[in-house]
Each structure stands twice: as C-alpha cells, then as structure tokens.
Image (cartoon, rainbow, N blue to C red; front, side, top):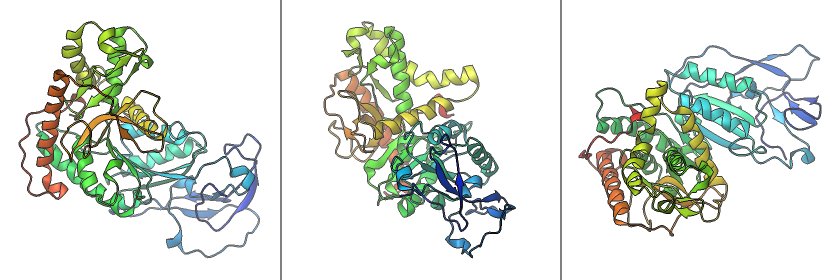
Length: 437
C-alpha cells in the first residue's frame, strides 16, 4: 500500500542506502527535473511545473492529459511510490493541511514544525496547501523554496495558490492565519467587517471542497467572531469542528502563575481562558491548579490574582512588541501546535485545555450561537467534549458575563456576514489586544 501518490508518467526505480531520508531501502522516484515557466497570476493562479528530461538512457514516454495531473511546487512534482508492502506498513495515510496567510511570520515558524513531524508525528506524511494573496505570492514562492531545501521526508506535496477553492480541496485540517491587521485609526467594527468578509469567503470555500469532517483553527483576529462567521458560511461542516485560537492566552496565563508560585510551568494545569480573545478574556485562577492543588491555596496573594494576573496575561503581547519591535509570531505558532496536539492526543487524566468553540448546548449557561473559549477534553481523535467538573464564584461569573456581552455585540455587528440580517454595531468599547494593532 503506497503512502500517497502524485500522478506522473515516468518512473525509474532507484536504490538508496538504509539511512535514506525516506527510511526505506527502496523507493520509486521520477527521473526528471522540475523547472518553472512564467505565468499570469490571476485569481486562480497556482504554480505549475514543466518537466525537462534528464540526460539518461531513452525511456518510453506516455502521453498524459495535463488537466488530469495534480499541480504542485518544484521538487514536490516528482513522483514517489513506496511500493513494497513491507516497507510502507509503518506509514500512515497522507493528510492534507491547508494554511492561509502562509507567507506571514506566524506561518514561517509553523510550516516547518508541521513538515518536520513535530505536530502529527514522525510516521505521518503530509501535504501542505498554502494560501496567499496577489501581493504576497512572490514571498509564498520563497516559502515553498525553503520547504524544498529543508528535505523533509514527511512532506510529500506543496501547493501554493491565491484561490481558497484550490487550497482547501480535500483539506482535513485548515489553519486560517491570514487576516488584515488593525491599522492606525481603524475602529474595531471596521476590522470585524473587513476580516469578516475574508472568513465568510473562506467558509464558503471550505463548505464546497474540504473534507466533510475538516478541523478548522482560526487564528486571524478578531478570531472568535471570525470563527463564527466562517462556520455560519460552512453549513455542511459540523459547527463543533471550528476553533478560535486562545491557546496562546492559556500558555501566557500558565507562565505567569508559574512565575508567581516559583515553580516550573509544567506544574500548572487546568488553566481555562473563558470568552473572547480580547481584553475581556478571563484567565481562570479559580479552577487552575499548581502541583495538583488549587491555585488559591498555593498563591496566597489573592489581590494579585484578581487585579494583576489578568492584566499581565492581556498585556503580554504589547510588552513583547515594545521590547522586540514585532508581534509574537513564534509563540503563536507554538500555541497552534499545542492546540492541534490537544485534539490528536488524549488529554491527561483530570486536566483540560482551552479553545474557542461553538457554545450551543454548553453546560455553563453561556449564550448559544457564539464562539466562546471554554475548557475542553479530547480522546485524541480530533474531537473534544466540554468539561463539566468546573466551579464558579461571583467574581468569575461577573467576568464571564462581560466577555459574553462583548461577543454577542460582535455577533450583531457581523449579522450581514452570517446570514442573520442587517448589522447593528453597538460594541461596548475598544478591547483589542495590543498585539493585534
């Protein structure tokens, strides 16, 4: 059984040593080089390859309809075929991962983690489908070139395009990173509308061509409402499959608790971020634990917990920008990896993780039909369930109500993008996190 196969016409058997990059004594590769020809970059532009015959012994060629051939980038156009059954039983079936904003700084860190096997495992071949824009297309070609030069044995295909309908074809994971940043003087309502249009289009594309059970992680901000817009435009995909990334907020909260308690961060568990990825977010120290004990039993400074802790988590991105002059691209990429791993590996007994998910049917009394960060557990099958064994006090409920009200206001502001009527923007205030400016 082959791991996966890219269509081609000429195959020449090559023999490799036992320490080959493909971990196999033998594999089939196309005995050709790939070159590139200029093309017009329309909305549906994608990289294609023209094949030049290598000087070698004559080989009978077959005529192949180019329309039937899957287009790809560079060296990834070459055919491979791990043909022998005994050599392929340890490999899993190839999975398709689509990434928008693929020429950006976050993706520059994330793509190489995906291709190396760090995320899905050392026996999981992947195909990367990368979405860019007209403006970023040349940079996207550079990204593909770097992926070529890195010689990742698990990376079997790279496609780059500016058309989401091409990039999302058969996607099993869609990581939606690309979004317009908030410019000087831009109102939050304007950003919701501009980015909402992007995610409405991407939702329609996912609905049309992605795998019916695709898992979607929305990173582009404002990510909670962008996730709502995306899922509303993708009715064929279960709403439960859409996640707004709040994992970086969770990681930052764990870091601050560890620093205050004087422990290493792996001793902090059961950390929840409730609500919106904004300054109304609620890092939950009531349910969090340090060395298995409630945080409030370990950190006796309850004033610090109630006043400084949340502010430190919220402002961490802004402080980083002041120090370094750029946003937190690397740690965001790490948090995306963490979010995926939390869905594909079983949650440790008694622990949970945070993700912005669809609220309908939630056990906490939070309003239905919004995307709200809540505590989740997974069996490692890509799915999750909401945690029931959480406690609330008046402080926590008051904070949750504030972030809930903000998300309901954002929902009304994008009603024209979710098919729910005329938009009415009555946002309670400017709660954009510093790193999103």
